[in-house]
Length: 308
Image 1: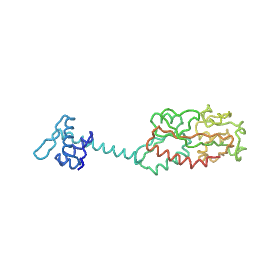
Image 2: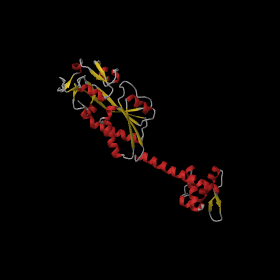
Image 3: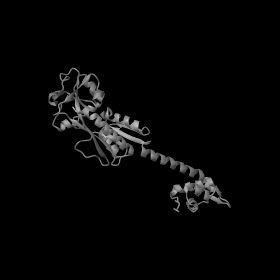
Image 4: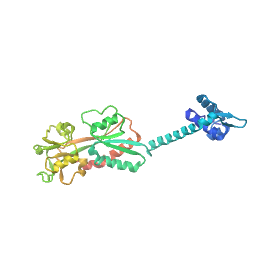
């Protein structure tokens, strides 16, 4: 006959205590728990030694709670309930029936890539709460590195390593388009060379072109004439619509451009591409891993529409 299992650990001490309190005897409690009577007796003895109090009065037939046992009873029940909730939450994390995903993204990733992936994630895992914060890629890389975000969609510098504690997962290379006012001479063109726009006033998001969408073009040797710095996309496109200049627009944000602005493809020999990656810790959470898979799916769906 196989030996019956014996309880172990602090959790089982309280389980044995509660079982004996309910059953009124070590033998009945052992039967309910599936342990031997001697094993339950040892657990109660260990708990009495740990608490420094006699928890049960031994009677001719069974046992009953002592005064110390009656004091401990609600605390033991609370420990049991807290542990049960903890186990349920841990299972929910593993099965994606619950939990939290802290997500970050740079602004134009929120035009198509991130919301499509997030919508699919919500359908598949409605119990997971997703919080999302927008901001520059360098900020999100720092937050992932510090353990304050679980996943971020970023556009990292092509020539630099990922920060310590961050793993980058390549999603796609996104081409840039040129935004022109409706009446611009090139508005009807199939594509345009960047050299043809050398005399235009370029509207950029930062005086340091290396920190803007122009970074790939600047690396290739282009130094556009910048007349207006606008950090906000609404301001940029408003300036273009008013004829104050032209600007680059990421292909993934093309669908959100206002109707009085025309987008023109850049010639394949000139088109700047922006590398888009997902940033996670080296060991991502279960929810981050699932979301990452959906980002890859969404990137593959969007890529044909972003190749010009």
